[in-house]
Length: 170
Image (cartoon, rainbow, N blue to C red):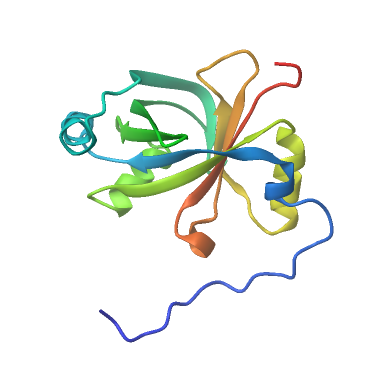
């Protein structure tokens, strides 16, 4: 273990206006990127006696990653655990936010925490006011106008922050 102190980027003073916590409906997901969904499924069964609620291959068409339009696919396993959704993601080649993470972290690991929000644009504005830009965003595979965005909080927190916004009245 290194004796060197952690170096974090300097952050501006918080601006006036609402924070993500004030705009969010709650923390609802922990996302973990892994190289092998089969291995995770076996481990979740062995360690916790859990079966996935859902296993899927998710196609994202017309997403934006680092300012570029992309079409990408990610494999996913979903578990309900102690009131939170655990989402295990296995990229299928990218380029995308998941493949980038796996390339940087060969064994995988904590990728994101997700907040449910109603007002997508208000959260984007609040995060940008704090100097945090979007790394990837697009329409959710859930359809119906549901959108997602991953914010580039890695330099500050060591993981991404995601929002999932559902149109009001749904």
